Image 1 (cartoon, rainbow, N blue to C red):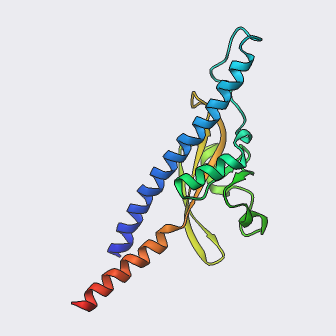
Image 2 (image 1 turned 120 degrees about the vertical axis):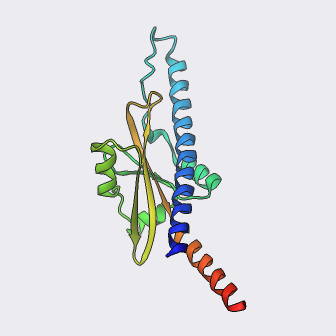
Image 3 (image 1 turned 180 degrees about the vertical axis):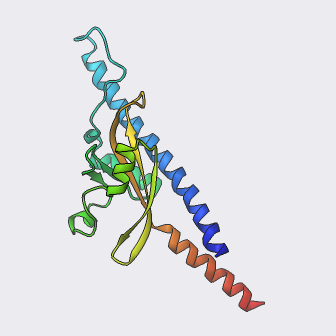
Length: 173
């Protein structure tokens, strides 16, 4: 029980940290592209609206793959309706192991209840894992562009390793 609680707290903090890092990276890419578009049109328009947004669909497969590799974690991007836009592991969606729709409770909590983050436990077959969802917003933070999902598989593996180390230590005493 002690190891499980300690491990759960540690992994929740780690997942939240990874989520913040990846969200910041994604928003920076989208905002940079938005600024580039605005600069291209600057001569054609006298005012530039700071709340204007670039579609999250502009975040391409290369962006997601690079961010996934940098942060060493899987990434899923869903549109404002909860449909998969992009992911770092397309094979799990192509094979039908995971739905291309966002978790319904996560979608409800983020889109209707306007929560800033949602953590839940999800399953693929017998594999259980934590999953974090957060909205991707425009520069002003007042408009949701898409949703970021980070499935986190390390928790169970880490817990088993800690318990194994503990039991080995006790046996060796």
